[in-house]
Image (cartoon, rainbow, N blue to C red; front, side, top):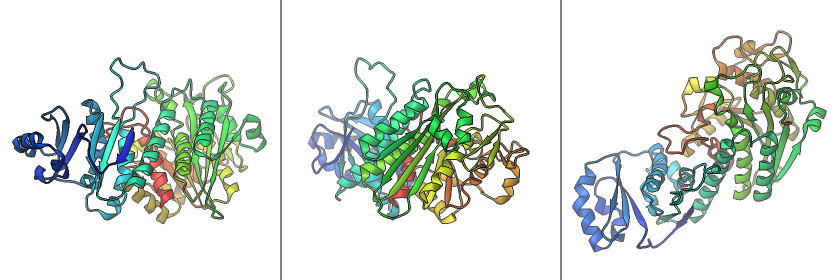
Length: 480
């Protein structure tokens, strides 16, 4: 999709009117020719009475106009409306639309400053569909091809930035949606290499022997049951001079069967997306490189497949991690925290300013928050607050849960140092975070349990499948 600022709206462009009251005061009313203007005046009352609804109208001469009467407005509604416009345009086969950027500004200064960037991002992600495995329809795909932006300010750079972020979110979704039979640890490693070559950052892949040599017993243990060998993906984007790097760690379980603690049928279908945290990290690095951020950023992704077989790791096994601590395996389906434990220890070698891990870690996070926000845990309240504000700005919402020392009793091992499951069925998102905390105690750290936002839901105005969270949030944090 082409997104560009224009000074003059072409006569064949379909117009988007977002208005609050008198439609004749909208800037696009002056774009209409005489016949179109008279027609809009004649239907104005019928449009006014339908609040919070939209109408697509054929104007005299053949082009269309999308009218949205929105008397109540805030930045959350603004972001959803950006997506909704694209969804409606696709449904009505509007290939070329013109949008007035001022329509999305709400008067909230912090948000209004980044509206063009957010809009370009939202337009991109709303236009995405996962069609890799589909035969094209005879009449072609119904994608929006051009979005023309009218604004009284110069927003070219902001639109470019937003488009790049949107493209990288969509690439994240593409990876996450790819079936587990195709997206193996090797496949994820190749995707990271391709992203590095395209965007301009270094990628190194550790193979099984190298993983063993540095003592990553957690990664090796989880991967034992699969014929697919583990990979440890290391990405480096170093454009921040002498400053300490930000290290991003993403869970890369390319398919999670649950291992010997096999998942039920209802819980296994989408488990090719259990590498969504890893996919997000890859494409945050890619976006940062394309945006030429003056930062030092490291991306780490332990990539494994968790499968049941004669060689699988067992409940009751003790795995020795890179830190020297042993993990007592109580549940082979709590594998993400095991591989992340090794990755968090590896992150320390960079002497980072902060480590942020991103993982589809627990179903308990979904029970706690539903599917509209990821859970965040942090050892630094200021960073936690900054992340929450970044979520409000980008639509990648996060909400905190406690990280208290008292919860450490819940993951103490009987025969090992720590257990990979809590002593009760309660507070699973917290015990998962507290487990990870044991391996990153001496460095500022954030854990994002993105399981609630792994897939889009009704009302997101995104196509079914992976949602691409939390790429936008992490980039906002890095930009800030």
